[in-house]
Amino acid sequence: MQKVAKDHKPDYLLIGIILTILTLGTIMIYSASSIWASYKFDDAFYFLKRQLLFAGVGVIAMFIVANIPYFKWIKYRKWIFLICFLLLIAVLVPGIGMVRGGGARSWIGVGAFSIQPAEFIKLAMIMFLSGFLVQHQDKITEFKKGFIPPLSLTFFVFLFIMLQPDLGTGMVFLLTCFLLIFVSGARISHFMFLIGFGIIGFLLLIISAPYRINRITAFLDPWQDPLEPDFKSYNHYMQSDLVVYLVSVMGIVCKNIFTCQNRIMILFLL
Image 1 (cartoon, helix red, strand yellow):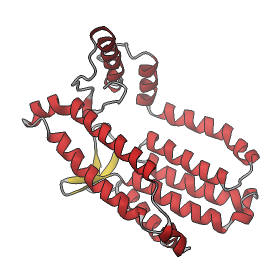
Image 2: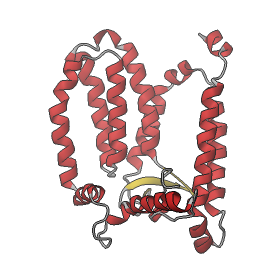
Image 3: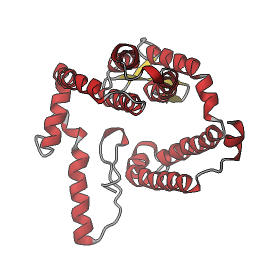
């Protein structure tokens, strides 16, 4: 197994695609944030510098991790999962977790930087759940012994993500875990059992927080009253229309537009 991992050549096409997307994203971040950065920090390259720093660290980490055989990650999956899960709990502790603009306590400050434990728990869960499913492959078609245990762990971690609360991250987490369980050989009939409960649970999560309903209505009608608190979450949609109009009429390819709070921008707009 080690010989195969050692002789395996990197996928240069995949690396090229990743670096291309990273480069385009960096250009778009500068285009979207330069005016605001110049106004706020007197430095048009403020956000670009930060992005280049994190991108550089990310690329270095990518090549380091890519050279570690996958079976070594599986070996330490329990410790990795435990550490990430403890971080997920720590973010809920006042004084440790940081409350951002949206009201969610999703971040932990580390000096001048901050980390989001929910993102790390995704990767940790993939490793842990994959190892579990491999070890219990012969039982995966059984409802009680093969399907319920990984499903229970998935919902248990999902509960802590929702305590922040972070519905978007939680839904990505659930879908990722469901996909792993499915490709491991779980019966489709078992998943059909979850559909009804899943729909009811999703509706309850939306109804329990009025702002989620407002976001849905704002998405359906982004041209509604701009004074509504959730309208700002979709004003980039309207600015997208404006840019497309400018492109079609005046041939403008890229505009420096500050789309909304927290420097949110979309590739389509730029």
